[in-house]
Amino acid sequence: MSAVPTSSPLQARRHRLRGRLGDLGLHGLTLAAALACLVLVGAIVWKILALSGDSFDRFGLGFVTGRAWDPVKHVFGALPFIYGTAVSSLVALVLATPLAIAIGLYLSELAPRGVRGIVGSLVELLAAIPSVVLGLWGILVLGPFLAHHVEPSLHSALGFIPLFGDPQQTGQGLFTAAVILTIMIVPIVASISRELFLGVPRELEEGALALGATRWEMVRGVILPATRSGVAAAVILGLGRAVGEAIAVTQVIGGGTRIGWSLFPPADTLASKIASNYQGAGSGLEISSLLYLAAILLVLGLIANLVAQVIVRRFDPLRGARS
Amino acid sequence: MNRDRRRRIVNRTMEAVATVAAIVAIAVLAIVVISVAKRGAGAIGWDFFTKPQALFGQPGGGIANALVGTALLVVMACAMALPVGVLTAVYLTEFAPRRLAVPIQVVIDVLAGLPTIVIGIFVYALLVIGHTQSGIAGAFALAIIMLPLVARATQEVLLLVPSTLREASLALGVRRWRTVLGVILPSSVGGILTGTVLAVARAAGETAPLLFTSSIFANSVQTDVTKALPNIPVLIFTYSEQPDPALHEQAWAAALVLMAFVLVASLAAKALLARSRRKLVG
Image (cartoon, rainbow over all chains, first blue to last red):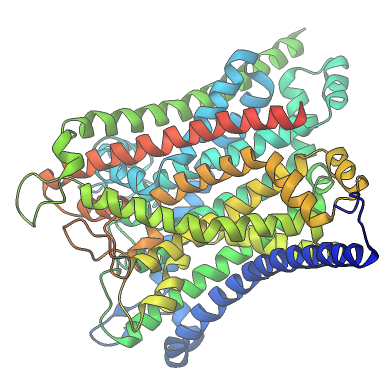
């Protein structure tokens, strides 16, 4: 330390030099770590795009609309998996969003003091359950339950809507996948929403209540409008998670290339198609096509992520100020 | 009068809906935990933890090989992710000019949001194609998942360190690097530890990054990290895809072990975080 008295100018200079070197060293070391993160993301993008090149050269953008996945004839297309991804994630989002917002509101506005922390932690624990465990439960417990109880009643009550076609025997299908995805994204969206709702200034809430609004009117008139963009970002993050989830979906979705209206039959998502080929693909072209699927997934994931970040940083004064 | 009554009823209904939503979430958690515990408890015993997987088609066996493998994978992943994550966080909070801090922050958030299967297939493309699956590749994939979690947790706790502490140290003429290493990091050890525990809990349960990097493994205890290491998530995944009920029972038991570990670790991390935050903020 330079506060220590030094005996000679030479020693002092050496001391200063060491201090400067230390500063430079730590700065350089931490900078290197930060740059490593940048390089890592760059490498992920580059490597996946590079290895999907063979398939891209062969099928071009037509890959996205190709309906066949035939390793024997060397014809590959992504449409059935894009369909599976879109349907399962959207259904999950439709189920999860209102549920998650309601939970966020309960935790931030309604829950009694003693209960709040406990319920909040339990909801977060739901997010901590490993997806492979949830998938195991999905394939052996939830799937059969949906197939034998929920799907038949949905079919008989709402069968005139083509979404609710004939129930399945095994319970493996898009609908089961969507329910599992719902369970996975509810806690994520709920805990972000809770934070947003808690961030709404107290004066605004109390002002509304003082004007005679009921609690629900206060929520609708003050809290939801003030946090709209943040909640939208949370939902997009949830969507990104649902689109990218591989394991639990692979376990419960059954697999297949069917495209149709009904939610119940088996299908595949982009992620589950990649995951179910883990024991090795036949040809180089098939591997390249799997990487093409991964590239699509990567692009979708990046878009969801960046859009959510832009919303959070730009349009949400509550969080923008903090970051 | 009538309108007031309607408003009250709407209000009551909405409150009830929100409460029911919270109950549903907790009920789902309870149902999953209870059904895993009920189905898994039967197979758990001394043998389950000490014997490796049975050969194909034979009864009995345990998960000893997968336990050892998962422990090795997670330890290696930690060794890779911790230094990079902590140093990145230090750079962001202590050194980075705004111009650089923003893109790095964005990249870390992007990394946290990437589909895990994409990370798995990236490592497959990088380290497995042309070689074989290996524990190192699996650990590297897990490390990529842990990295943003560690970095974020560290960053959060570094920002909590009171600036008076930093300024006091600098005012005494202490060099910046010694301030960081001697004052700031030690006072945020608790938070870094919490982040690490959370990241470990997450990594221990991840399957997707391991499917392409460490999934085709032996039935025996394996400590050679240049070969694929057996691990619990992949074991559960492959057993769950089999039709054999005996394998399902093993999968439930392994799931119970994994879930118990993850839930206990998450709760412990939460408790730790609350403590270290109280200490810092006072």
